[in-house]
Figure 1 (cartoon, rainbow, N blue to C red):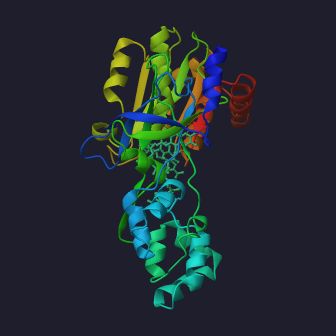
Figure 2 (cartoon, protein in one colour; figure 1 turned 180 degrees about the vertical axis):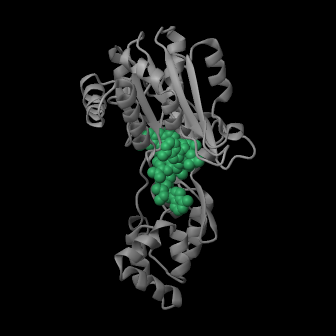
Amino acid sequence: MPDLATLKVTSLYNRNNPYSAKIRENRLLNTKGSAKDTRHIVIELGSAGPTYVCGDSLGVLPRSPAPLVDLFLTKLGLSGDAALAETIASSTAINRASKRFVRMAAAKAPASPGRDRLQAVCAEETKLDAYVADRDTVDVLTDAKGLRLDPAELPALLPKIAPRLYSIASSPDYRPGEVHLTVAVVKYTTHGRPKQGLASGYLADLHPSDSVPVYVQPTRHFHLPAPDRDMIMVGPGTGIAPFRAFLQHRHHYGHPGRNWLFFGDQHAAYDFLYEKELTEAHKAGLLHKLSTAFSRDQTEKIYVQHRMLEEGAELWRWLESGAYFYVCGNAHRMDKDVHAALLEIVAKHGGRTPEQAEEYLSVTLAKTEQRYLKDVY
Ligand SMILES: Cc1cc2nc3c(=O)[nH]c(=O)nc-3n(C[C@H](O)[C@H](O)[C@H](O)COP(=O)(O)OP(=O)(O)OC[C@H]3O[C@@H](n4cnc5c(N)ncnc54)[C@H](O)[C@@H]3O)c2cc1C
Ligand SMILES: NC(=O)c1ccc[n+]([C@@H]2O[C@H](COP(=O)([O-])OP(=O)(O)OC[C@H]3O[C@@H](n4cnc5c(N)ncnc54)[C@H](OP(=O)(O)O)[C@@H]3O)[C@@H](O)[C@H]2O)c1
């Protein structure tokens, strides 16, 4: 139970009033040869910053990168206006094209083949959807060549920067005054220019002692179980983050519950995030079982749910003896596929029909006993 003083400090900071923290470390977790750029970021909270518990997320308020702001303003004939550049960088998101911005550019650009194209795109919603899907504002200005806007009106034409959440990868008791993140940097090239996600790109470019505005977003449900309860944790890719925090916490307090981690990523040689820590935790007995699935080390895809199925009998025994089941990571399809594997395990090893298995997972485990917990994004 936190004391009143702690509660007061926690509630001071939020998305409208973030804490200005300092970067302590920004390290690449993938090795040479990887297709990915995943960062381990350590942020100092000191004694004045917000407090958190394992399972919470950290809100980060990013800035738009200076080179992109510069290119954007140059295209509009507004380069050299330092105050405007600061407003754009600190408050507007220009790394994605909004429909509103495209419509405005189509209406106001001087006549050109690019402007005609923009107007054709705006005439049909499906075309507009496809147009904005992989473009940023600079791509729009390339089509709207010669567009000139009133600098005073420009910020209001752009979406405001929104904070992004990152699952906290450290235990505040094991690493006091710090918060750790595991960040997959969004990177892709479209229309001839490399692009980055706003917040992940911003974090990737930060150096030790740079400032970063943050706040804690408390979790409502993704908490550690009682010390003696077993945990099964499924966390492919950056989904590992909260489980690193959980393991640090259990190590720090010597909790007796057993811990089983399913981790997966593309290649064992390049993408085994926190490999040393996890294999050492396994050897030391903190991690009772470590099941890995490297999807691109062979021709057929092997994912975490395939490893779950291979160990279905054992996984069922853990569930039957009261283990908590946690899932964290990219929500694209993974959580649904993990759920389907779990259904198969419950049906096969628990001797249930598919309907009974669904009832067991969605009602008994998830709702009544609250030991099937997801944090997917
Ligand atoms: C509770 C919670 C916890 C989270 N925890 C983590 C975590 O621990 N680690 C982590 O890395 N993330 C985590 N996330 C996700 C994180 O909040 C951000 O959504 C993520 O970092 C992307 O944000 P961004 O600002 O970098 O990218 P944005 O600027 O938001 O850009 C992302 C967008 O870029 C576009 N895009 C991406 N790839 C392509 C492509 N190839 N071609 C064309 N367009 C493309 C897509 O439209 C995509 O939606 C979490 C999210 C939530 C809600
Ligand atoms: N909503 C979104 O689209 C969204 C949200 C967050 C992040 N992302 C993107 O994801 C990138 C990386 O995220 P991440 O590092 O956390 O890793 P990730 O992409 O989630 O991948 C981690 C591992 O999960 C595998 N995987 C893919 N589909 C799966 C499924 N259905 N079930 C189980 N495993 C599956 C991947 O295999 P393969 O890669 O071989 O398929 C990889 O081995 C980010 O850079 C961002 O671009 C997208």
